[in-house]
Length: 165
Image (cartoon, rainbow, N blue to C red; front, side, top):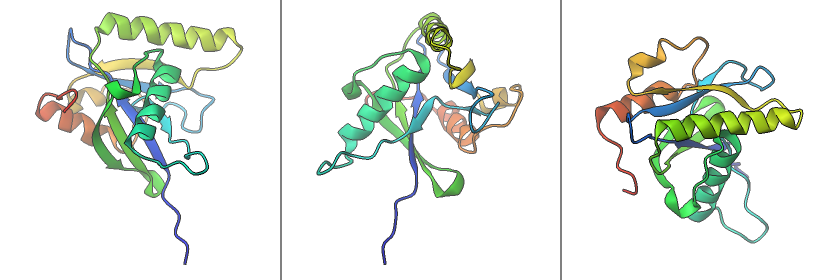
């Protein structure tokens, strides 16, 4: 009997140094989950023939998604796996922690990345973002939330994230 692995995704935290919040973003109307709030991220690309899906490959996927969705760049070695979450349809989410950045830099890069997509005639995958620090803040967001979002933000609120730990 052959078993297939469940879908896997990589999600990113970016914790600005000036206010200690987590970036959550809303999916654009043109996506499969319009209006859904989630962490920036995407699907894990399968490994090349003969390659392994190891921690380095997961970090490369996470760094690619971070740049594509937020305009923030980070070396794969600068990302650390922080949590593994169950998701919809038996999927697995791999939450990575990116290096802390000032909130102003996060805003500037996100706006620039969305503008660059629109300039190419494409809708950005994420159309809006906000910074939250407590699960209660999620209740203020209009629209559905990814099933993993509240538990991840709750864990974040329980103690400081330890970048690189």
